Image (cartoon, rainbow, N blue to C red):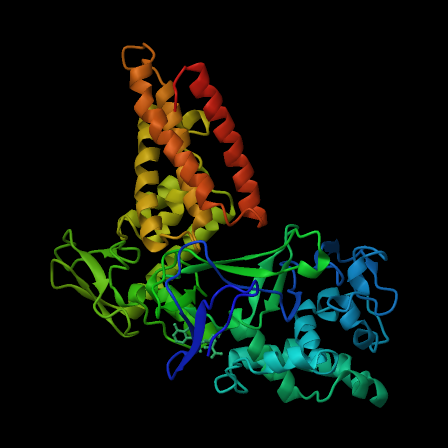
Length: 524
Ligand SMILES: C[S@@+](CC[C@H](N)C(=O)[O-])C[C@H]1O[C@@H](n2cnc3c(N)ncnc32)[C@H](O)[C@@H]1O
């Protein structure tokens, strides 16, 4: 089996099947970074509920956030919209598809709006509507894996889907349709079918973040076949800004590191900066498989020690060894110290790590100051290897404050900032050499390293005199390499909101850097 690119290129991948992975893609020839593997439009997409639906909800036509209590309403179905002129209201790919069905609910309540308007239910509804509106798309969609073998009544995901989507759609809309309307829109619509669709969405949908903060879920006819690896070799971007409306949400999947013919083509379903236990748990809970990739199988996570802990010690106290899981693919594994005989069980480690994770999250959520972050770093460093992912996260926040606040500008702090940036860059590059998932982290690190080197070049020497041109040239050379790397790591993120904003900030820094070099008559 094989496929060609949409633009008629030579065959890029083959679809294969195994007991363990189901269907997956392998390279049909050697693939180089930058090559496009897949580019396609979504079969169907729909909004996700907003973070605080009591405050804002997505417009049903264009998904722009609108105020829940004062926003306008679609004149037919009463669902929130940005304005009566929103083109998505009648567009059959957007609200035009579902407005008739949503209109079946006659009464309108003005309290408890978040219960009344459940935006998460719109994508399942749009999916089931494809049966009649686009049978070809429906055929592709219903072939996708739903994992209904695990989603049985009583399981968390089944019960959640049952209450918030299936019963909601059936009771409020589908059962209220007249028979003629039901026939017009659906070949079949049952509780079971809606559950299968919820399973298909949870297993296969990709999340699209829109510039104004709302999010969509979308299903793609070929991209969904990609398997997961914690060392992905591809990156995907979504077309968000195309002037051609028919191109909206096109996905483009590109190779990021060389892929040899016959090797698997993979994406990452989890977070690259979580440790192995957290990633594997997340994949089991949401995608129903236990990852056995090279990174998950390696106790050191490719030599990064991202999950390693310092020796817990016995009665005599800890030694200077580190704890790593004896078998990271075994959920019951012990964590043995590398130097003494102390062992700790996995559940104890997991409990500690999740408590620490909450602390890190809390401090970051409240926009932690340097001293708060430093205190936490100091406390957690007693237990964690310096490269542990919780410490990575704290340090990544700190380097964006060091050298940017008046009380944190000393040469000592700038040296520290440089050291941390270099350490974190080494971890980031090992985990994600192709910038598939960590491009923004990498860009921030290189940008901050550039800025620290620049500050250092401007700082007076210990005798109070300014540095000579010969003394600043090596610093500026290194700063130039860093800022260029920061920009390159974002080359595929410019279409995306946060990537775009960061790119603009770094471009501005580069202009200032070039100006400074000119003033100093340094040719970089
Ligand atoms: C988006 S689908 C991928 C396509 C799927 N293999 C198929 O045949 O339809 C995700 C599902 O594929 C399987 N899968 C993906 N990556 C895997 C991996 N690394 N190991 C085991 N199963 C995997 C899991 O069943 C997962 O829930």
